[in-house]
Every structure is written in C-alpha cells, then in structure tokens.
Length: 328
Image 1 (tube, rainbow, N blue to C red):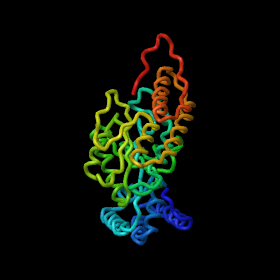
Image 2: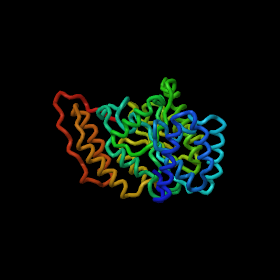
Image 3: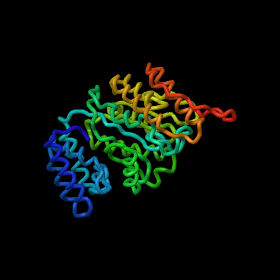
Image 4: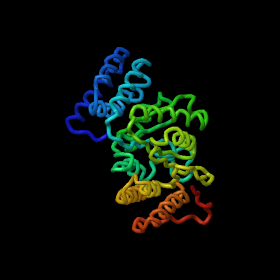
C-alpha cells in the first residue's frame, strides 16, 4: 500500500473496510458515494489507496466503475480531480499475468505456472525510491484480459504465489477473443487507473505473446506524460522488433538492469533482484533438462554481463540425443 502515517493509515483502512462492506448490497451506493465525496486532501488519497485492496471481490476500480451509477461515478471522479491537485506524484507498477508474472501460454522454457525468478523482487522495487516521476509504494496493480467474473480466483491465485497486496483490473468474456480485443480492454483499465490516481505515473510490464505491445503503443501515444516506462518480456518465437519507448527483457535481472538505466531502480536494487532470481531459479525443477539449460544459460549470460560472476549457476548435462535447447 502507498506509504501512510500510522494514524492516517489506520483510519483509512477502517473506513475502506466499512465502505467495502456497504458494497455488498445496492443500498450502499449512496452512503459510499457520500463518504468518498466527504473525504478531502490527504485523507481521500489514503482512503483511495486503502480501497485499492480487494475486499468482497471489489477493489477501488470495481467500486467506482461497476458499482456506482453514472451520476455518482462522475461526481466522485470530479471530486478526486479537484482534491488531487496538491497530492505528490507516485509511481505505480501495472503488470500483466500470463507469460509476464508466470509462465503460461507462449513461454517455451519455464514450466507452466511457475512464477518467474526475480519477478517479485523487480516489481516491488521498481520505482519504489525517488525518481523523476515521484516515489513508488502504491499497490501492485494487475491488468488482465481475463473476464471480471474470474477476478476473485485470479486474486487468490496470485496470493498463493506470494504476490504482495494488489488490485486486479479484469476484462470481459469478449475481451479475450483476439490480441487487439485484449489490448483494447486493458487500455480501458489503464485509463480508469489514470483517472482514479491522477498524479501517478505508470510502469507497464507485459509480454509480447499477446496484446501487450499493442497496449504499450496505445498508452505511449495517448498518455505519454503518465507512462514512466514500458517493459516487455520477450517470449515470442521471432526476435523482437524495436519499439520506441519499449524496453524488451529476457529475464527479470535483465529488466532490473535496464530499469536502473532509466532511473527506476538503484544499483543496489539490481543486485537484490539478481540474488533473488538466482535463489529462485536454483530451486526450480524442470522435467526437461534442455529447458533448464536454456533458463540457466540466459540467466548466466545476464549476470556475467553485469559483473555478478558469483551468481553463475551450473548448467545441467544434456543427453546426447537431446534437441537444441529452446531459446527465447
């Protein structure tokens, strides 16, 4: 959660819990609206941050855009726009799930469902210190094209994997039909996030297996002043083609090193991400030694390039009959 003073944080958390409880019935719409309109200044900022945590299946985005009616929503957003004028800027990391947080649809190296080594260390540190875009500390936000009805299950899945407190912005049944449809739905969610947090800049993290590159292009074109950086995990079979404003990465140590170059991580953070990725990769079990070889070789090349030679992992022996190890 965004850093808050002890008393202010407790008050906001208690108020957020009360408002989340009210959203369980239609009768809560008016009191929820009234409470948001009554909150001002720092208290409103803390309250919005507290409501980003899902409760009863609804985070802040779902409360404002799915629960409140149109008139109530417009009043709340206008109020946020006025009250946020004096708020400090913050960096908010927005991440995709499949093939970005963990291996899923297009990854040909890591076992299905495995959280990528170093992912959490990178995502929780990226932008967390002072940057030209402000400080981080906002909840990690997941933007996915998965239908909204699956959001509670998605949140539980991510919690089991150890992903820290986060908000989940979901799609719809039709949004998973094509890459373009997925990108369009994610863009809607990103726009909602920008409206709800008008002083925040976004770091977008996705992959090139589905519609995230389309989303990146759209975000950079429509909200250039609000996008601090875009990181795309390369899992597609073809080599990535350069895209202005987009940073491609093969693993999260690589992403951390490039984020440091953009001022979003400190050098010590890169080292911490490298150590976390080393320990997590060393503990993974691969059914196919060729895939383990490919994962470790890519990691080794990155840490050697960064001068962390002490983190190099031994490569598994490959059977004589094996095929060439898959590459990213």
